[in-house]
Figure 1 (cartoon, helix red, strand yellow):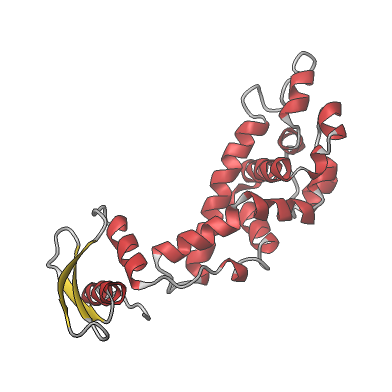
Figure 2 (figure 1 turned 45 degrees about the vertical axis):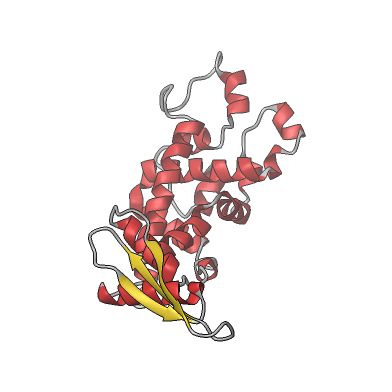
Length: 234
């Protein structure tokens, strides 16, 4: 446990927390009659995993706000999901060799539990929960930012088009989804002109014009977004 603590960059006052974090439920069932958790019956693997999931989510959210000050909520949410998903945490677990520290039942160990991506991701969350309880948010922040530094730039989502941006803008304010209505179609068959109106609850409809319904809808969405101060490239 002391070696694992050094990998986390923190000197634990209570190494029992860290031992609970790497004690898989498959082993806890075998130990239940002979050993209690170091921190009482409630602070065990699953509870530390629950805590770690929330803590790493907060740390990453704050980091993204600093790193991408111009991003809208939708883009931040996509970046956040990419960084805290199980695959990313599994890579963090690999980087500190977490599999070697896992305390598994013999059956789980023999079936490849130390390399199981789900187990590693969950255990990483549990370890981060233990790190938070022992060292506070600063210790978790320091470790997570170091461990995911190479991944934060790769978590960039594709640019959102105006319709998607308007949808997320409306949902973020508790409004129903925008609705689009074809107002007019004119011009010859080989060169049509479409006029589409977009409506968002509580706002006046805005129209857009284009050579297809799809383009006209995007133009309308873009026009409405400009009215509320949101810029989109398309």
